[in-house]
Length: 518
Image (cartoon, rainbow, N blue to C red):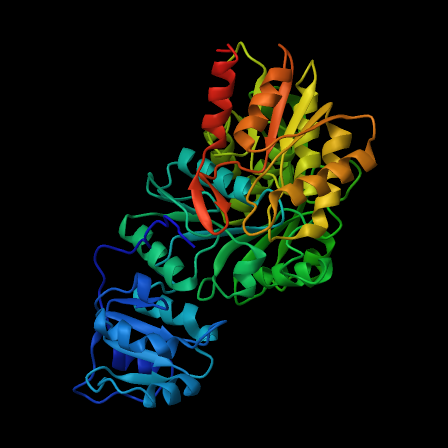
């Protein structure tokens, strides 16, 4: 795939650890005295390897990492860890690696996070406070809200999410929702170097399944919700649930906060290995914390959070929808569970939580035009919540633009189209990331499902998305709203393996300008 992927972020200065000390820590064969290099980094990929690195050669989907050991050494790797199969593969190769020690470790993938933590010195006692949020929807928003509140309280903050990495005010585009563990630990080491005191981390189910947060113990973990998504990676909802539950184990967390707004919250409460408190925005549901929305406008959502010991916090988020208030309530409860003073939190956010969430129901239009919201939502539940939120603040028609990912969970497409048809007045179906799938076929399936759900809806099939947003704008009048779901913050479209530069936000603004709106 042709990609413009940001580089891995590492600390500028690393106090190296000796290979001998690492071998002793992980009970490996001690290297010869003359082969005891200092390790200043760790890599599992030669594309990101730097001189001084420990190269970890593991089995992959297509080949074994041992086949890249020669390249790793050429690039400056000073030591190698592999499994017995990798060691046997290495013995068959003809290059000379006698000056670079090779240690054998069973199942190196399961030790990768701990190895990275050891190399970068991310040890208990010297870490910032760590917060992790998981769930189908809302985990990115909650992560940003945690960081915003911490920043308003005077903390030096770090963040890693689907959209961005933040390091003490510096912002960098993300590579993956949750980085591989060597990148994660390098990032945290860089944050420590920049005097970061608290870090908010978005953790996907795939990250837990692929052991990307190994070697970290979070002060507080949070669960938002679970709904139909990622069933291309997991066999069913139960397997998807099981993939997220490990975040609430003693090896990964100290405490947890669980939202009960979906039925799966009770599973986390029952099966959590760590102490948890609960939160809900649903009336009549018993929980420790309750979120009540007091007002909704296109620019902000006000709410009250009430909890144990008579704590009551009134604030607002400059975001659209009751679901955003629920995310903010979860963020506040997680901070209180970490030991932050509720009174200090309340004082810091009395005038609102100052969080900018790129591509999360982001208003990209001016004050004198129809409201246009660009959003990252790509599941039925996300559509349902955001359509309801936009509807509440719209006096005219609600026009929705959306497409579906190619080569991803196709089982959710009928439900996405059904929710879109039932929640909007006009529907414009277009392309998103077709990847290697036929975009015409994707759109046709969405059209059929939408019409089956609501035969009378005004609906259009428009490709490419540049034309689709212009069609939506041409149908809009003052007081109307356009909700463009899918692209959100992303700055590309994936078409046959090529990441083509693309900005939905820019396209929406250009479409409005071309139509004569400010």
